[in-house]
Amino acid sequence: MNIGLFTDTYFPQVSGVATSIKTLKDALEAQGHQVYIFTSTDPKVPKNIFEPHIYRFSSVAYVGFKDRRLAFRGLIQAVEIAKSIQLDIVHTQTEFSLGLLGKIVGRQLKIPVIHTYHTMYEDYTHYVAKGLLIGPKGVGTIMKAYMMGMSAVIAPSQLVQETLLRYGVKAPIRIIPTGVALPNPSVARQNLRDQFGFSSRQPVILSLGRLAFEKNVALTISVFSELLQTWPDAQLVIAGDGPARKSLEEQVSELSLEKQVTFVGMVNHDDIMNYYQMSNVFVSSSDTETQGLTFIEAMAANRPFVAIHSPYLDNLVDNDAIGTLVSDYDELLAGIEKYLTHQATAKDQAIRAKKMQDVDANTFAKRVLSLYQDVLSDYHQSDDVDDEYPTDDEVGYMKRILRNPFRRN
View (cartoon, rainbow, N blue to C red):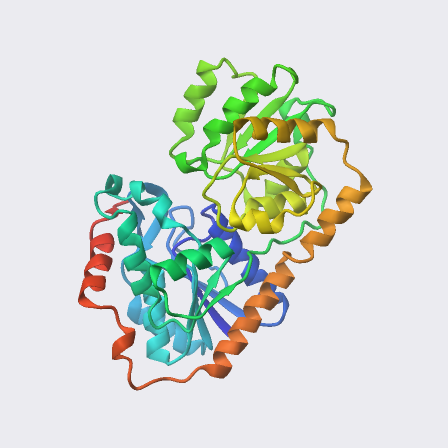
């Protein structure tokens, strides 16, 4: 099968979405399929470099997300490329530039288009013109408009499915949790404890992910400051970057925790497992997670996690060996202390390994491939598609969000 993945975000950009797409691409290719990435240009990728099966289209940076980009041309080129490689299916991973381009490619080639909804935009509208361009209520209208005519939509969790149904999305929705590529045990791992000067017995708590305000890393820092009263040699490593970093560094300074908290910035994807394995426990105080890739990564690295309750995690966590879910400050503190006190056992590792079989990259790809096959077998090009196009009001909403959110770079 020839599969086209259309995404505004891809490596070398670092995000859960980029990682998810790379994981799917590699796993599908391992099963004998041809996967082609249609994505945006990136300042870190030289224009003359050859990237097999990756096509990049001229783009600009997006306001509020300096490391996110939107393509502004390339439709004719994309259609011609898609014809030449004889795409069987289009799988969009964004609702914006490359996503819209992917929908048009699908119509031109008369092939099905499916979509994965990655981001709960209601939590991010403040990034777009400080919430003046579009508010939470407008998100549902835009998403419903974008997903009109889709052959199917993938929701990474039940929470996402419920959100899409609330928006009024009519396309068939299938829940497929995002998978993660298991680390190769034969590859030598870097000992980051030596690099950071931590002893082998020193408690290390890891926070890893985009440093956005809605990720609520400030709560983790507050809890950590109290944890030091009983674990004075503990260290908190904060991996990632984003708009909240300056505020978080100021918080650390105000609490005089500069020697106990380390900001490492953006982490190379190939090094992520090293950070999990350096830690005793992974902690997330975000209450906006929809697919929990970092939690699966923690399991793959054989580490427990402490996180805030969510519909996705409530379904994932069924044993303390996997993680502990909490609702408030005191429970978060108690959860971290539990894993610092508890010595991991072979039984814990076996429980995590069994859970990983349900969310590894191969299982992820097989589920997505099954959806592709179902869609292709049922797909019929209809001559009457008037009711599949957005209304004038919906087009207006889409134009509002796409008209001005560009920043030249």
